[in-house]
Structures are given as C-alpha cells and as structure tokens.
Amino acid sequence: MLVYNSSNRASSLFDFREMAPASATQDMFQANPILSTTSGLGVGIPGEIRGYEMAWAKYGTLTWEELFLPAIGTLALLRIPHPPRPPWTLSTHTVSFWVLALAREGFTVTSLMVTRLTDIESFVLSNPAWAAIYAPGGVLVQEGDIITNPALANTLELISLQGASAFYNGTLAQTMVQEINNAGGNVSVSDFANYVAKERRPITTYYHGRKIITGGAPTRSASSFSLSLFY
Image 1 (tube, rainbow, N blue to C red):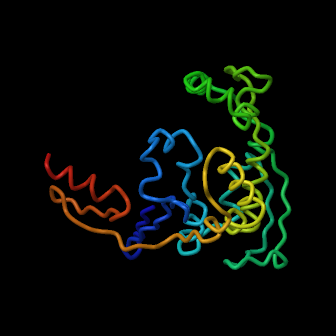
Image 2 (cartoon, rainbow, N blue to C red; image 1 turned 180 degrees about the vertical axis):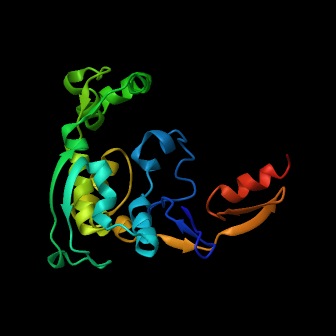
C-alpha cells in the first residue's frame, strides 16, 4: 500500500504481501502444479490486517474500532474514549454501541453476484464453508435473497477490539491453520505469529514529464512500470 502525505509530500510504502509458510520449498509444486491454485498448499500467510494496523498507527486519524464499522454495521452509536496505540490494553477503554450489523443482518444478493456464483457453483456446493453462506439448503442464493455472515462479523469485531494480534495469535490463527491444513496445506500457528509487515522506501522516476512514485520489489509495480517504458 502506497501512502502519499500531501502536507510534506512524503511517501511511504507498506509491504504486507502474503508470505509462504516456513515449510515451503522451491519445488513443492513441481510434481503437481495445479495444487498451487486448488489446495491449501497454495495458501500463504495473509498480511493485510497487520499492514493496515501499521499504516493506521502512522497516519490514522480515526480510532481503530471506527475503521471496521462500515464492514460490521450500517448504523452505529459509538462511544470510545480514545484508545491507546498498540500494545493494546482493553481495560483502558470501553465500547458501547448499537449496530444494525451488515454481516449479521445481511445484504441483498445482486444479479451480478448470482452470475459469479453460478460460474463456480460446483466449488461452492462442494465446500461446506462456502455452501453455508452462498448455498444454504444446497441451492445457490438467488437475486433478492439475503446473505448473512455472522462468523465474519464476529471476526471483524474481535480484531476491532483487540488489534491485529487477534488475527495472528490465539483462536483465530488456530482455526485458520486447521482449515488450511485440512485442505492440504502445511502451515503452523508460528507462521501466523511470526508474520511481520514492513515499511519500505518507494521508488521514484519520471514518465512523459510526470513524476511516478511506486513500489519496488517484491511488488509488481516496478516491473509493470518498466514494461510501460517500451510504449
């Protein structure tokens, strides 16, 4: 994620790309390449939550909890005495809110969603976790139906209250490790606990008189920009 601060014209690059587990090897997909896209063996450790927290800690103006409200709920009455930055100490603040939860109360299925789900119908129906949300009763949802995802709401609420560490440690990490490995993966709770986001220096160049600020390796930005120089 590239952040540009207009007040001082400074830029920061937050690198929170997924990382391969410690068990990964260079030839792990050589015998069966399709496993990289169809099994838990192709799942890396996600970095978004840790990276967003790092960016928020440096540039954020809202409280961490407020960032999650649009995803958790559509209406909220929130009272939070400004919580501290990480490390989190829940005893120093209280949260009191009434919320009509988008994930808990649901959202309306659109025609585009029906089209996309139909394209992967066999996958949805064969995957219990997906079927429970998108095919309750064994039939794909239809336009106008209401989809709920209380598990997602609970997860986001926990992260909003306890910070990114709630995602990378404890029961959430243990549950993800179990699901990934049940699908053929080989990750551990240590892989989650050891994930670290990084702040990197962006690279800067010029193209047709315009200043370009982008990310270097391991992002794809630099290579994509290099290709554009041929046109």
